[in-house]
Amino acid sequence: MKTYTYTEKKDTRSGFGAGLTELGRTNPNVVALCADLIGSLKMNQFIEENPERFFQIGIAEANMMSIAAGLTIGGKIPFTGTFANFSTGRVYDQIRQSIAYSDKNVKICASHAGLTLGEDGATHQILEDIGLMKMLPGMVVINTCDYNQTKAATIAIADYEGPVYLRFGRPAVPVFTPEDQVFEIGKAIQLQEGSDVTIVATGHLVWETLEAAKVLYEQGISADVINIHTIKPLDDKAIIASVKKTGCIVTAEEHNHLGGLGESVARTLALHHPTPQEFVATDDTFGESGTPAQLMEKYGLNSDSIVAKALKVIKRK
Amino acid sequence: MSNTNLQDLTTQVRRDILRMVHKVNSGHPGGSLGCTEFLVALYTTIMDRKEGFDMDGHNEDLFFLSNGHISPVFYSVLAHSGYFPVEELNTFRLLNSRLQGHPTTHEGLPGVRIASGSLGQGLSVALGAAQAKKLNNDSHLIYSLHGDGELQEGQNWEAIMYASAKNVDNIIATIDLNGKQIDGTTDDVLAMGSIKGKFEAFDWTVIEIENGNDLDAILDGMARAKSATGKGKPVCVLLKTMMGNGVDFMMHTHAWHGKAPNDEQLENALNQNPETLGDY
Image (cartoon, rainbow over all chains, first blue to last red; front, top):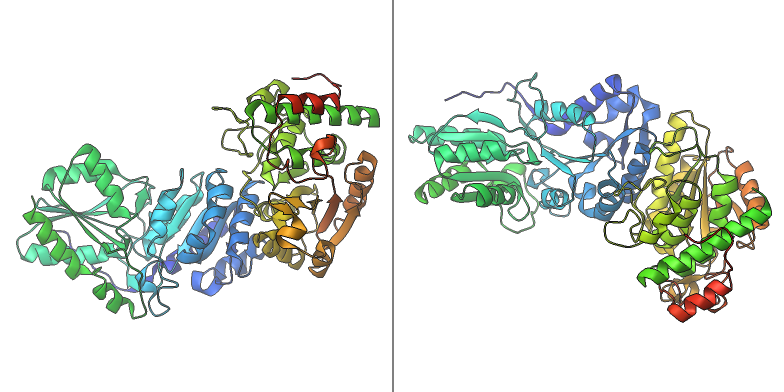
């Protein structure tokens, strides 16, 4: 079993900020837009270095999304920044008509996704955004797991032509992916090789899954752990190959089970290789105020929950 | 183009609109007929356009149609401007056509740069394109067209506030003031008070065209609008039009906003607009 360690915790949104800063230095077509959340999105450095390529929109997300669509006409690559809730649900029709249906090269970058936003509560904790975005034809949907992966993904999506939804979060979480790992859209990353159960995870749940795999290992259970950073397009091959070894699967995400990664995996398996599956996800509910750790425990999104679901699904084989 | 030629083209576009919506028994003739002179003048005379079409539109003026339901007039004017064969108007709203009910880039129709139809988004898109022009040191202008009823969508006011705050002065946004929407007059549905006063309060330069169905008045008003650009403020044109213009029974009513004429009504309407350049 591979050992994963970390020396520091950092927020994934800072990875976005670092990636954007690098793009500012390397790609003159990249422009950034923000709806009054510069500090939260860590866009300060980009703005300091490229003031003419930054657009402060004010608290007007609908306007921001459509302006971003317009900026692509003229060859710009706009990166919009606000919370996940205001990046998706609030502006669904703007994204649908002006970005997705219009095939515009806009990168929708969404911080503070999921429960780990914490104390602000359910008004700000969106658990439906992956579903909203993956249903849009042509939209790429990415949920990164740590600082390094978020930085790499931010840089990678600038080279991809088409609309992308990039989802990341607020709290500091372990930095465990290699700094130099190349980000390939749609390519799953194998983290552990195992034969008893497959666990595929996205976003903050990837680290929790690695912790869960250690606990399972101590109980004599070997888990095949896969990081699915790209929910759409889904790496079907990696998932099917894994369940052919293990015969059962757990999906883990900081999102409603309706519309999330688990649902996409279930479709893939139903079509190609029917397999018992358990879901680590919220159960069709809103969140609430609390610390991130309290919320992840209460809503069943931590390593303990992953262990429990793994043991359960193994019995269903 | 001479004024006679513009008149002839205007009449032919009117015929196209009527025949397109009649054939598929759907579409929006009222607003299309009301904006015919404006779009003809825009594409033949006012805009500085390149030959051919590319999405980025560097070094040319660009137009965005926000009230996408008047697609018949947009398609006809685009076709007569050389973006695609006029015969393709025959496919309007048919299965597998590039001429969708509302304009879209999705089917690759030359001349269209954004999907529109869900109202209220076009001004924001136009502002983005205008700011891209500035970044590219391209001194060409962005033109856009919006319905007056469409101003009831809140996103417009985000965009209107933004444009003046950010000194987007390379845009001329035209409002089709026909005073009508699907359910009745704009005053009956949701009275908006003084649209001029509202734009001025948001620090836009406002140009009024009292007879928005008169080619000379449009050319004169748009020339004034053009000379108002580049002065730190966005420019709005209030174009007073007659919905259904050129077809007597479609005027002075909101009934033809989204309704196609039957065979008899089509014949009557076409007789009022005799063929000029030839039907497709």
